[in-house]
Amino acid sequence: MYRKVLLAYDGSQSGRTALLECVDINCLLNAELHLLAVAPLMAGLYLTEGFVPESLQEEENRRFQEILDDGLRQMAERGVAAQGHVVTGEPVDEICRLATALGADLIVVGHARHAFFMSRWWKGSVGATLIEDAPCSVLIAIAR
Image (cartoon, rainbow, N blue to C red):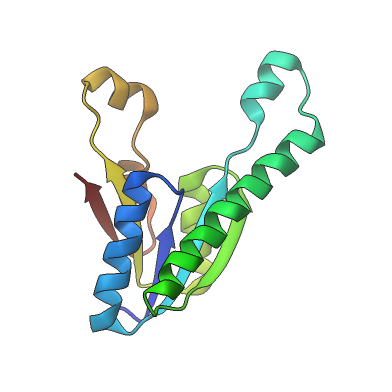
């Protein structure tokens, strides 16, 4: 069974769906839960401007800390405790890195369906890439 579950959380509607599903299934699993927020690197700004002021990355990291804190609060309100983690980097890489470090048995992520093929192609899919690279099982919660 699943003893350690890592939930990747970004505060989006699909992320909230995954959070709530994780809370629901944990009633059955009684697993050790970890909530992860991945702040993206501000590399895009570096490519266009030639530098990234440290304050911009710090601001983004603070924003993701607030997202994480909100997710932890939502879980606590439903009687579920989790350990929180905020990291900076590429989502799939960081999710896999923490899942491996924790010895996670299950990764939970949210997924929003894209209305148009081109938006899926342009944005890519963390879930699809994660399935290929994950060190354990992956549950993808679909936001409807």
